[in-house]
Image 1 (cartoon, helix red, strand yellow):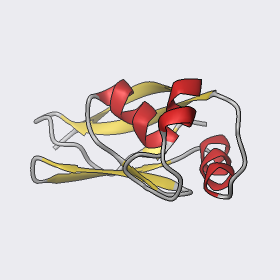
Image 2 (image 1 turned 135 degrees about the vertical axis):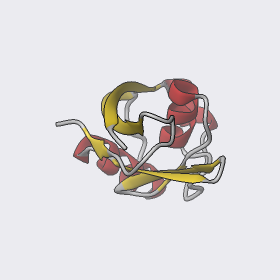
Image 3 (image 1 turned 180 degrees about the horizontal axis):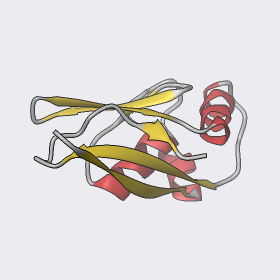
Length: 103
């Protein structure tokens, strides 16, 4: 089965920061921004994000800037809004496979 890359631009806004929850992988600012960018719920940890649904699991390695943002936010710092890009490898059938962040 062949896969193609789908690039997704993610914007973490001041609203995401103000309404996110620290140490909650489903509602941190980056999870909120990924949900808005993809239309799917994501669980975010300091170095990666996971989407589980429709019998499939998608794993995305976050870029260093996003990982640092999550660590700072969870440690009671107030990071600024930010943007980053990720690439998701999508199988031709529509199933999503393991993903990596863009450089």
